[in-house]
Length: 93
Image (tube, rainbow, N blue to C red; front, top):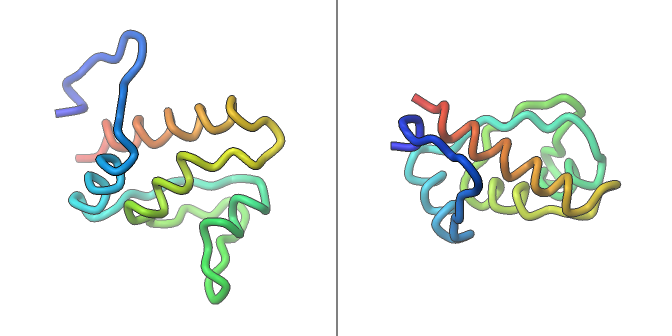
């Protein structure tokens, strides 16, 4: 169980395994606070994400959110999003 684990340095997660895991647990709620490009990337044309929106994401959306790097700080922001997703998964009951 993730919540019982202590991550001292890093965690290696296969991209497809993350997608499948998130789908298996019914998705997760991930706060998306900024970056219009990211919100456009994750939303559909009929349902674009709004600023400060907390969408319920499926595995494919979490995968895209975690891998997205076309924002103002590229890889450092992507790393923060990946850490955010792992925290959400670890805290999910």
